[in-house]
Image (tube, rainbow, N blue to C red; front, side, top):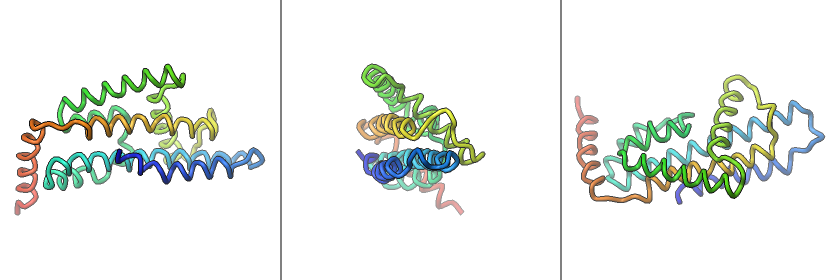
Length: 192
């Protein structure tokens, strides 16, 4: 999967921070580490989502890929589960949206049964905490580093579902739709 390589730098960083941060550190310093780990986690999700979208579009058609790369150059923090579906997956067709929702539902059920945790809630919490830390400087006070790292691991499954929904479905019908869109995008780009 294309998203797996995007997770590696954050995985290494989180392992390092987990070892480096000790209980003896000042509470404020611990909260800063916690905030930085959250920002790193969500940033990796953003990078992976962007790569998934780009890979999907470029496999369909080179011109379509160029158009989509420009359109989604900055997805910033628009990666809530609802954003992934409404702003990205649905853009490519209802079939992909249905597949994404089904993959999420199946994986959520599996995660609830095997890990007794909600991947959707973990993912949403990380994004909310990231927003609070980046925009207000507030690290969450109701969690700890171990839980944040666990949430990061759970949240990866949301991105994996996004990847699978877009990049494991191939059809001639989609290519028939994409090619005219790509031609129209190129024509629009070359308008004086």
